[in-house]
Picture 1 (tube, rainbow, N blue to C red):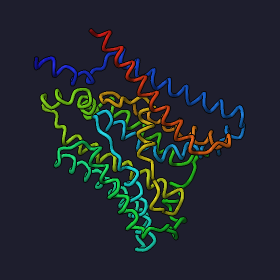
Picture 2: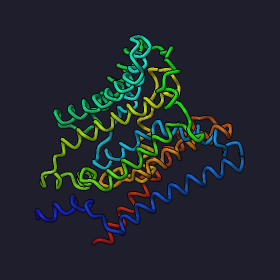
Picture 3: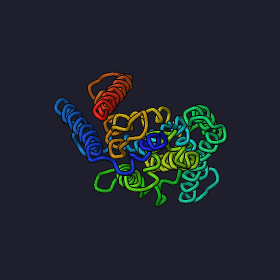
Length: 336
């Protein structure tokens, strides 16, 4: 009996070629959807298929997409973080206030912003472990807590007067080869986190927990420690995303990041990460983020209310979850 309980938790260690093929198919599928969407919009609006237009779309995708990469890890564990949009806002406003009102060097202020993201993410993890409740419940509370922090730090107003001539803004607010630095950072982080997710023991354990939490616990996997690490990583990614946003806008707003938690979760799910846990794709999350951004831009270009982009994104989430459930059910039937 014990042996049968432990088997599902060890399955992610050496995934079957068939399973990996399925995952690759998901990634290819979402990429094809993305290409088809870009092509369709371009037929009716040729101005969409330009470097400037695609760069703007990609940059918006990068800001919440970077957080979506971390959401893949959390969903794979069977967890969700609803506070990342608020953490993002805290980091941006804290760094801006340090630069403007305390004359702190931008490099130091940026590092402080990222460290703040890590600490807020760690606080989520500590609370979840101490209270022994799912991260989604903890972060439902800290979402409001952190959003309030952003308002308090900024005084509820925009923060102007950031030194745009500083090297940080000149470098990270630039667009090498016509591509904004945020997109370059998004791609680099996608590569790094894909390698960690697929090729390290940490990535294996994250998937093992989501595959079968009970078996993972019985086999001695430190679930609490891994949850703390992953939520800390999530906060750090929110901080990095915030600093890239600050580099572009050179201003801060306490309301930045509203809804980013849902867009990040949507990007991960649309990209092929299982809502039930145990399986995910970091690369797919990147494609999913681009899909959401293209939907928003495309709807605007067709003169339709931006509210419909939320509707379409929701429909795509439902479709992605339904397809995942169908595939999982079919695999279970075949394995019997």
